[in-house]
Each structure stands twice: as structure tokens, then as C-alpha cells.
Length: 105
Length: 467
Image (tube, rainbow over all chains, first blue to last red; front, side, top):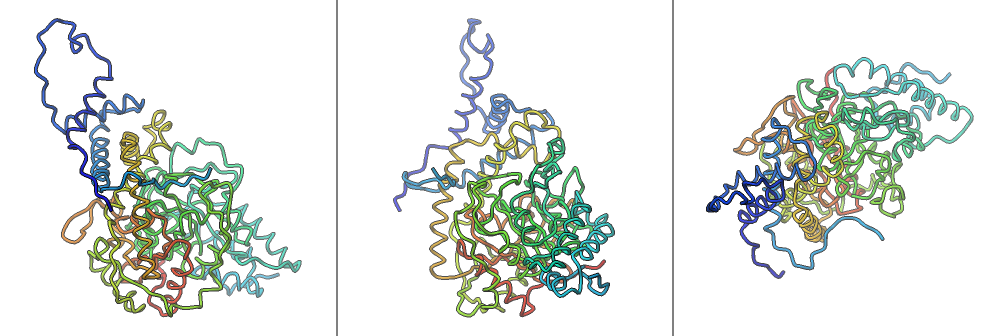
């Protein structure tokens, strides 16, 4: 079977996703740069923070409740899903691979 | 009057009950009355039933007796009491699916298709059974209804999510129950409770009018105390049903007439690699079964670990899609352990879910190649015997793993591609454990023949628990 090269670094992808989702949330005057303050160098986001931000933003975007008491468990389960998904994601499949769901037209 | 006090249906098979009624040694009413009495006596301990349908069952049994007295030909399951996991629609009851939320749903107006098919064969529905909330469970514990309890040790889990189905059959309350299996929910309780369970090929049995969990992976099937009873029920339930879009347009292929063919000529292998035994119980069970079958060949099921992961991802995402409105409206009414997983599942990136579905097709192709060389594959059904209720971890080789997520370690990579499996109970002391007999798609007959042959040899059996 033809093997494909690995996709770009996953950690980088997760960070980017987290930033994008946060950017989609309500932007305050401060963060939009309207105060005229000198732009600060972009802070490196820790992977753990990125996941936490992604969980919070996803809950907001999907309209799902996220009680502070549930956050740690949801984050744990989300990370578990991503770990399983990574195991699948890293497996090379041809571009022509078809998914398996049952559908009859 | 057909009554005979001598016939004890308590630990009798469905096959024996049918024979006793056909010969006049018992009536359907006497069998159902005895069943209801056992449920009243034993179920406060087992906690397997969430609804008992006394009036319906007795009315139905009386009608069967009337029909017999009029000379009507009995069906293959006439007078056999059975119960269903409470995600099956039962006319007049809300389909609670182990939840608090669904108790507010209107009562079902019609029985699930498989209930109708079993009753058309003469069986008598006596109640609905406890289960893990929304079937997202391997333990048989339920925060709303309490845990179903293992008849071999009331302090231990039944396994889940068809926990009530396992307890009711293993505890001698009914000879037959129906469950559902998305990732192992028939095979895990069959293993921990020491009974037979059949997860047929994906698409073989209609799921019409049952509460869904993961449409890509959901199966329904029977649990019983003998392989022949599994086959009797399975044969009565086969056939296409347009009400389930995934139900294959395939004629029924009865297995009961094939059971006595034995295992001569069947090529049977033991799965290694990922499926290697990691406990003394699984080693003992697998050795007994493999030796009795002369299964000397080892086989590798490729990428099984990845298959389990793909099943995990699809389950999280599809399960969440079923429940997303309920999560928005009533998140606090879920079992917290289920809620937190479903919320996380709703956040799973679609691209990764699709990749898991693509991997599923690839994996299916690779595993099907194995069936050119063998007719059946053996693996353990669970990594351990029944854990204690509330137990959080178990020892797997030299590591501790969480119970809740890992009781399906051996079952998930198999149901992922819809292969038919019979879980066969090995009567180890003090607790039983099952082995999976896995066959090629649509070859339930092979797995059931092997199960029956081993039962005849005395290698596998449902042990009667202490009362």
C-alpha cells in the first residue's frame, strides 16, 4: 500500500485550533488592540492550556453547559478521545479510502 | 387442567419449557406464574428488573394455553418467559434506556420489532431490565436504579451495559433475555455472569423501536443459559425489516437445524498479539476451550488496538450526537460519568471521526482475509472475572487499568466491524468467565455450532448460582 507522509505536527494543530476558537469568542476592546497599547509578543500557549481553552470554547460554540465542577472530567475525557483518535490518525490510509457507514440510496 | 407442580421452570432451558408445555407436563400460565414468583422473591437482591408486566404476561400465557387446547400448533418458543433491556420499546411503558430523563417520555405505543418476533414464536414478555445509562457502560451499575447484581456474588458487577439481562438469566429468573451490544454490552455481562450471549452480524437483527446509542455499531441479541436457546431465539428473530435502515435485506438462515453438525472440519485459531491473555482466569478459560477444540493455531488480528481506538472515537462522537439536545436542556439529570463523556464526545473533531470510519473499512478488509484461512477465532471475552461493585481498577498483566473503560478491551475490536460472536461461559471457580467465538460475517451458525459442541462436551456451561 502506498504510504503517505505524516501530517504536520499535531501539537501545533491543536494550538492553532485553540487560538482560532478563542478568537471566535467575544473580543474585548483590550484584546482587539483599540486601547493603543503597544502590541505584546504572543505568549506561547501550553498544550494543556490549549485543550482547556478548546473545551471551554467548544462548549460555548455548541451551546453545551459546562459547570466548573465538570470541567476537569470533560477535559480528561476529551484528552482520552484525542489520544485514541491520534492512534487512528497516525495510521496511513490512501486518499481513496472510503468510510464505512451504512447508507443505501 | 394442564397444571403439574413437578415441572420446575426455574433453571430449565427454553427448550425444556417448550417441550414441557407441548407434552402437557406444564402450562404456559404455570410457567409464567412461577417466573413471576421467582422475580418477586429473587429480584430484590439481583435488582435486574425495572418493570414487571404481570397482567400482560399472564393474559398472554392464558391465550397460549387456550390456543393449545383448541389444537393450534405451538410456536418454537411457546410459553418461554423472556425479558428485555429497558431500551427496547414496550407498549405502554416509556423507553427509559437506563436514564432518569427518558422517564418523562410518553409511553411507547408499540413493542420493539424483536419483541414482536419472539412473541409471534410463542414467547411471553415478562418485563424490562436494568441497564447502564444510555448503554454507555461496561459495569452494569446505574445511578438512578442502582446496580444490577451478579448472581454468583451479590457484591460484584454483572458487567454492562446489559447488566439486568445478565443477572436475570444467570439468576434463573428467566431463561432468555434480550440485550444490546455496541462495544461489548452483551458479551461482557455474559462473561461476568457466566451465561451464553450472541452478538450477531451487524445488520442481521432489526433494531426497530429500540433506543439508539451508536448507529454505526449498535447490535441487538439474546442471552441464555444454553447455546441451543440462543439459537432458538435467534432463529425466531431473523429476517429483514425496513424499519431499521441498517437491517440487511437477507433471508433468514436458521441455525437450529445445523447445531448437531458438530465441529468436524472447522478450522479454529486462537488470537494472539493484542488478545494475549493477561490474567490467570483468561489463560485457564482459553486453554480449556482451545484444547477441547484442538485449536493449536495462533493467528494475529492486525491493528486490533487501533480498531479499539477507532471504535472509541466513533462511539464518543455518535453517542454525543444522539444526546446533544438532552445535554443542553438537562445535563444535570444525566449520570455524571455518562454526561462528562458525552460532552467531550460532542467536541470530537469531525475529521477524526471520519478517519475512524475510513480505518474501519480498511480493518474489515484485513480481518476478512483471515477467514480465508480459518472458520473461527477464539479470544477472551473480558480481561477479568466480575469486579466488585464500585471497584475502580483491575490488574491487567503488570498494570492497573480503569474498570469502566476496559472491561470491553477484547470485545471492542470485534464488534467494530460487526463480526458475529458467541460468548461461551467457562465455569471456573469461584467466578465464571467467557471466551469469544468469532466467525466470519453472516456465519452465526459456525459460532453457535462450536458453542453447542463445547456445551455437549461439558467444557462450557452456565453454572447455577447459590440461592
